[in-house]
Length: 552
Image (cartoon, rainbow, N blue to C red; front, side, top):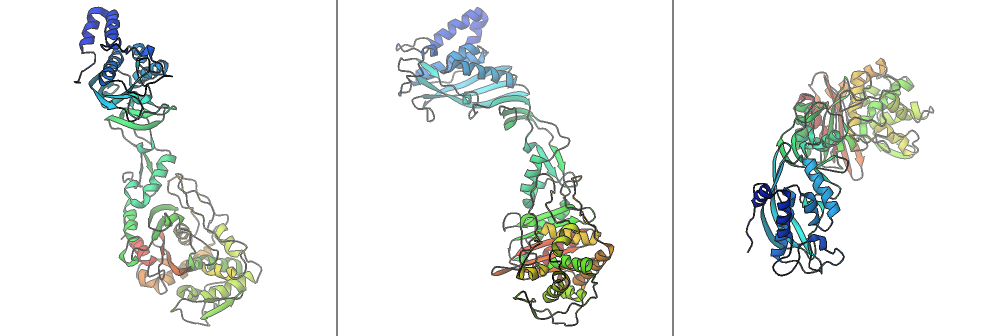
């Protein structure tokens, strides 16, 4: 029958030590580790690791050896404790590392009980016990266990590995007490208010984790407790906290209030649970104020690379202004359909045929045929087939952006060398043209700001510049046309009546469905939204954009 026995500085062994000194320890250790009543030996120095018995030692044998091992360990007789194991040298180093790493002051063991055969170590008996360790910062209590093996010559040994020190401790790991080592979990990524945790927003959880690992935090103080560290001293796991620390902080550009609006907006009931993504920027400086998304292919707000449809007409119009010298009043006949490079193009339903249409009017009603005809006539036929790519890269800053904190984004694409039907499709944001809500929000911001400011999520992050600033003439033309689209054009059903707003809708065909787009700017914010499966930009993405422009 087994019963709990407490081993420690306060136990019987301690009393004997006080009376007899170190010599008495040798006597006690000999009684605990010497011959048992049945003639078997528990002296681990005689254990033969090359001839381990497949039969576990008896419960009494195993418990007796473990008591002796723990008695030596608790009294800092590490050499004696190590000799009770099957690898004394490794055990002694690890036991010393345990004491040093924890700044151990006192160690006691209680409830030393047999637990039958080991399920981890074949042919071994399991003995469990409770540990109470006074370490730097406080007292740490935890349950533990060891396996006891027996060799064919009858000698026993505690099977050594680092889990003897603490359950699950790896061979290349150790324990430390005091100031807890820093880890990603000790860094709090917050909104621009310095308080709101970005991880609280479902759309930003992964982004916050990435920033925590890559950005340089400020402030903070470590907590105290016990932790597992790797061979290089880096924190692996916190086992006990004595005093909580103050996390270091990475402040982002995210506007907590607008982020809450964005999280609701992409779940608007009008979207009927279709995958949606949106990005809001401060058009004055490129600061990312909100990123929200649902479903789709991951984070479709910054990585949802899709044909942007007629929102691309902003860049097409800019190229016609800059490279062909057109104005909003230039002719842009709007026909029901048009054949370009042997491919038939048509307008969305509801777009009126207006042979005398101007470029501004074609933009307002989003006439595809007018933009294709003007693009071909003034750009492709004049030998400037790469005009859209040039305008996007050199004026609107299209390229490989780094928004900060290691957060990855997918680059938009407007190929400079498109051929065949794609030459026409590019002018209306189809074919091989692709973009993300992040990029299209930046396009609207460039128009309103009359200059490109590369989007960033960390204040102070490096911002690439556009090789060629947008001209005041082109910015003014685009602002006028985008205001027209918002007040009396395709975006008016959602944005009409909002002061100072400019916008452009887009509906892009993709396989057997369409995607809805809308990009717009207001008094401070530029926004773009994408709804996969949206029947039109205004009737899907329009609901998202309106909420962000009005603050909910």
